[in-house]
Length: 83
Image (tube, rainbow, N blue to C red):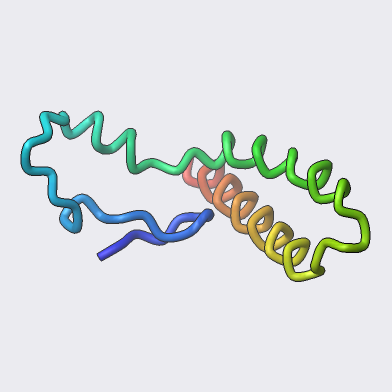
């Protein structure tokens, strides 16, 4: 079982075998949280890297980056609207 996030699916707490670990609920929540603001910063760095490949970079990678950026921005907007 997994939870949908802007960057893909993250395992749900119930899907993980946590035996032998001493994680608090707060720590586990932190580990499984996708911070859209941090991801937005990271995603903004990708085009400069992609540009180093010039025309050799497949368009599909640019398309995936555009889709990722859109999902991140949608998540950020939803978080603001929920405040």
